[in-house]
Image 1 (cartoon, rainbow, N blue to C red):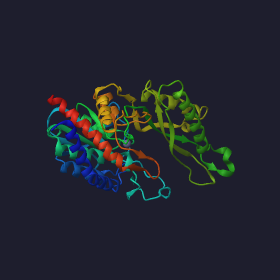
Image 2: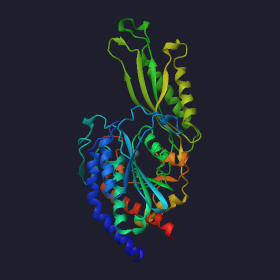
Image 3: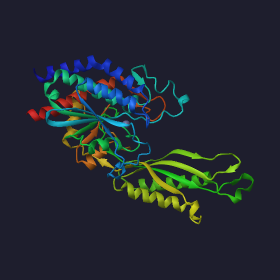
Image 4: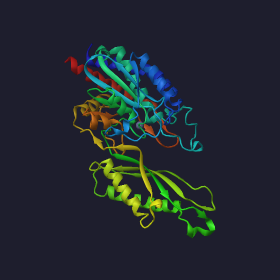
Length: 413
Ligand SMILES: [Zn+2]
């Protein structure tokens, strides 16, 4: 069978499997998998992997994972929360596909046109929290794998693994735990929703919780107190100045500081004693998480200079300590995925800006394994009315399948 005929067969097999993949995606979206509640979604992934002939294992987050280089600080107990791993034994070059089932919270549900965990298809898009980021990537990968197993005996005989991670959105510790447990390969493709573009890099990301300390008092005697909310406003202003410094002259970016959470106050006629600010600090490749943490501690302390020790703000890491990462665009893995994309679309894929992070960083930084992200087209991820374009799941599967076909064929050249 010549190559053109083989690709036609592959495309037709993918098209024929699309509806099943969409149904799988709908079931995944309907299993809310916010931090700490990933089990139901992981069950669905495990069942799908088993159906495709993978041996399914589970990897738990070790209690001392924070000591590993690159690890984040987990704030939720690991009990009952596992990474799901699928393995197909084989020979030749090995490949690992990676996705994460955890989703960010839906936010205020009244901002959604439709309920976030009751997926609905409308005008070619599927709506729901996680529909894009990144349960659509699972649908794309399973669609490609199922078609390849049916029509490509070389892929069917290859060594293929799948990691279904947790905590990608806050620490990355799921993929890190799996890699340390030996789930690694010659290359990794993460099926994040990149809009069918290549995503080869990520910025540094640090998550910090800043507890701003005041002194409680009655509102009519406010001069006896110190208002923690107003002090927190100064802290936020200091963080904005640091953000400008981090971006000044830096390559790439922008490197965003985001004030993501704020909790304070008990009563309108009380001077609040504590305000807690949750912040995400993005930073460029010339800095480490530890260096950025030290800079934050320094600028935050300056806002309380002259105050006694008990009124000093407390800063602690409560999530990402993500190092910047990058795969060179000329790397054979990047070229191979770009080539598969060009084969389907007739043009090279665009390059997505790496202003966030992904679990690709561990494979590149800690294990020296090439890794990149490629996946469907989504909109409003981390916002209301998140959605994925269904057609892009099928087209992404065609690209992924071509890439995988070529990858495993290298061992038989
Ligand atoms: Zn994601």
